[in-house]
Amino acid sequence: MNAFEALGLNEQLVQAITEMGFETPTPIQEKAIPVLLSGTTDFVGLAQTGTGKTAAFGLPLLHLIDVSQKHPQALIVCPTRELCLQICNDLMNFKKHVRGLNVEPVYGGASIVMQIRELRKGVQIVVATPGRLIDLIERKAIDLQKVKYVVLDEADEMLNMGFRDDIDFVLKNTILRESIWLFSATMPTAVKAISRNFMTNPIEVTMGKKNTANVNIDHQYFITPAHSRYDTLKRLVDFNPGMYGVIFTRTKADAQEVAERLVKEGYDIEALHGDLTQQQRDKVMGRFRAKSIQLLIATDVAARGIDVDGITHVINYELPDDIEVYTHRSGRTARAGKSGICITICHSREAYKIRSIEKMVNAQFHRLDIPSGKDVCRKQFFHFMDKLMSADISNGEYETYLPDLQEKFADVSKDEVLKRVAALEFNHFLKYYQNSDDLNTKTDSRERRDTGRDRDAGSFERKERSTFTRTVDNGFSRLFINLGTKDGFYKASFLQFILDESNLNKEVLGKIDIREMNAWVEVDKAAAGKMIKSMDGKKYNGRLVRMNEADGGFKRPTDEGRSDRSSRNEGGDRSEGRKRIPMRDKR
Image (cartoon, rainbow, N blue to C red; front, side, top):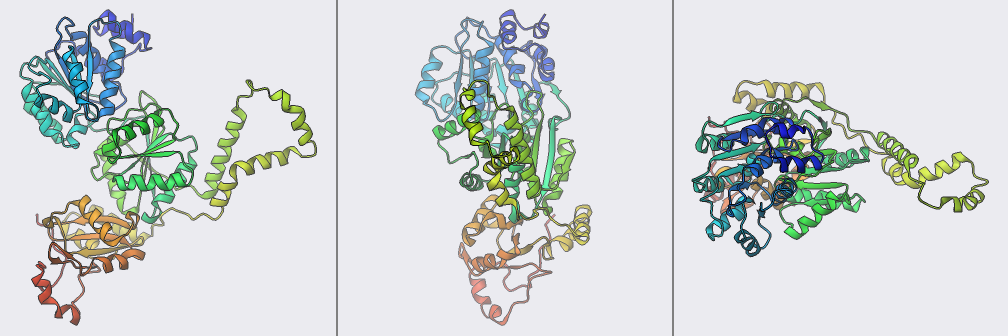
C-alpha cells in the first residue's frame, strides 16, 4: 500500500502521485493531510519552502471538491505569479485521473479578459495573486460566496509585500467558508494576527522550531571591507565552479549593476528585478530553469515565489534589512531533502546581524576565509580535470582522427600536451589572480574590544559614547547630517537620496543610522570628503543641509559658519545655532 493511501486520500489521487514517483509523504504532508481531509478545521502549517507544502494542502483540496458543482469551492492565495503557476501545475498533475475538476490560475501581467472567460466556464479551484483577485472581485467576475476552503500559501511573504488589507478583504468576503489553511515559513506578528482574527481554534503544525532554517543548509559568512564586496563575490563564484545559484541584493539598482559587471567579465548571469516586464521576467526565469544561465541575481521582492529545483548556492551579496527575510532567501536551496549552501558577504560592522540571524533560525554560521587567488586557480584546475576525465567520448568518431592527432603530437611529450591544455583553459585565471589581493578583513584587538563592548552594552547611552561619537575603524568615517525621518525619509529613500546627490557608488557606504531629526552615515574614508562636499550647504525642502564628520561631537562653528547663522535659521535649520551634539534616542 502506498503510504499516501494510508493517510486517507482517494484512489484517483493516490494513483496519480504514485505515477509521479511519490511513495512516502514528507513530514508536513504526513501531519497536515489527515487533519485537512476533515475540511472543517482551521489549520496553520509552519515549514520551510521546498518541504512539500503544495501537496500538503493540494491533495486534501482535490479530495474534498465536489466535481458536480461548477463554481469556486476552494481559493488558494499566494504572493507571486511564479508561485501561482507552480501551484496550478502541481494540482493539474495531482488531479489527472479526476474527471470534471477544473483549476484556474489568475494573476497580474496576463489578460484579465481571458481569465474572466475561463472562470465563467466553471472552475472549482482558483489559484490567485492578491492584486488580480481583488480586481476580479471588483469586476464581479468571481463569486466568493460559495467558497468553502481558503488557503493562504507563503502568508508571511504576502504580508511582507504589503497585501495585508487584500487578505483581510478576501477573508471578510468568504462568509460561508468552512476552514482556512495558512501555510508559512515564519510566524511574524502579522501572521499571528490573521490566525487570531479569522481562525477558530486552529491546529498548528510546526516542522522544526518556528522561524528556523532548513537543517540541510550550510550557513557560511565571509567578512571583507565594504569596497571589496564585489571582488569577494566574484572570487566566491570562481571558487565554486559548479555553482547554480541565486544572488540576493537589497535594491534593483544593485541587482542590475552587479549583473552588468559580471556579464562584461564573461559570467552567465541575468538580473531579476521590478523594472522587468512580465515577458522579460518569464524569459529570464525560463533560461534559469533550463540552466542556460549559471546565476540569477535578484531582489527579495522579485524572487518571491521562485521555486527552482537543484539550486546549490544562495549568496547574500548584502544582508536584508529585515533579518526574517534571510529565512526565505536561504530556503531557495536545499529543497526536497537535498543539501545546499547559503553564503553571506558582510563587513565587520555587520557581524552583529549574523549573531541575530543565528539565534532566529537556530543554526550555526561558519565564518570562513575568503579564498586566495591561488586557491581559486587550484579549485578551477581540479574541476577542469574532473570534467576532462568524465567527458563522454563514446558517441563521436574520434578513432578517425587518432592517426592525425598522433602524427601531430609525435614529437610532443605528454607533459607538454597537458600544460598546453591547462594554458588554454586557465590562462585568464592565472593572469587575473597571480597578483590578487587578500580580501579578508584584518581585525585588530582594539576593534574587537570595541565591537564586543557595543554588543554587550546594557544602555543606549553607552552605545552613544562607543559608537556614534568616534570615527569608524576599518576604513570608514562616520558622517553626521541634519536630515531624518521628520523630513519624510525612511532608510531606503534616504540611501537613494544621498547616493543621487553625491554621485557615489553604494559600495562606499557602510551602516546608516537614521533618526527623527538627523542621521549618521558610514562612508569609506576615501569618499568621505566628496560626500561632505556634495551634501553640505545644499538645500532640501527650503532648509540648509549640514554634513560633517562626527568625531567626538560636532565641530565648533568657524567664523564663516557663525556669520551665516541667520541664513541657516531662515532656511529652517532645526539647530538654530545651538551647540551641535549627538542627540540621544527618545525612549
